[in-house]
Length: 231
Image (cartoon, rainbow, N blue to C red; front, side, top):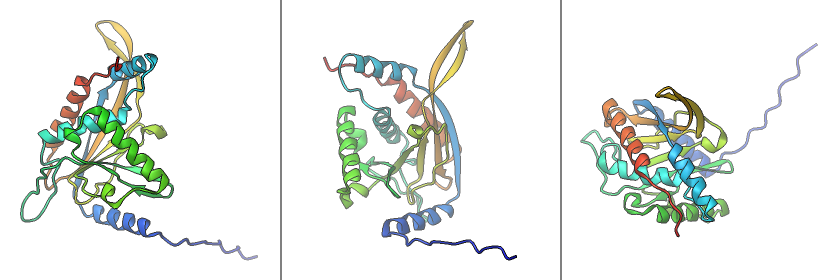
């Protein structure tokens, strides 16, 4: 009695999937390292709830992250750069790409000059880009020019993960879900809302201390951000 041969049904790659596969292969050649920092976003979670209770639409945590990461990149130009054998390439612009799953595709629309935009404007731009991706109307210009990328799988219940660099960028930030953790301070038990941020960096241009300081800067920016009703 012979075992029935397994049936295979190969599907042809789309042009976008071919580009993704090529870039992932290129990323494997980059000498990378990762670093993770847990950040306390309890205050931001509470402020978002207060804004919502006041009848306003609060900024998403992802939009807050784009704003905070952009300001931190301004302080850490190598993290916003790329490696070249002839020397480090440092970008004048801070353009933050946001990885978005679009069906069976992975697209990275870009918030241009994100370090110079107020949070409200970043929210409008990410909403515009998300709608363009959803409807298939995203322009090529919206998918080019990123100097750094954020990949957020928190909405899918992922605690933390390691993202692959979007070559030739020097780094990418992977964002996990907001989770509740027990705290103990001054003899009191409490609950905090914590989010894990993991940077994957090209070790040829970004070193361990650089990544640690960048994550600390992002944390500082998050702690300095205040969300309030418009009224």
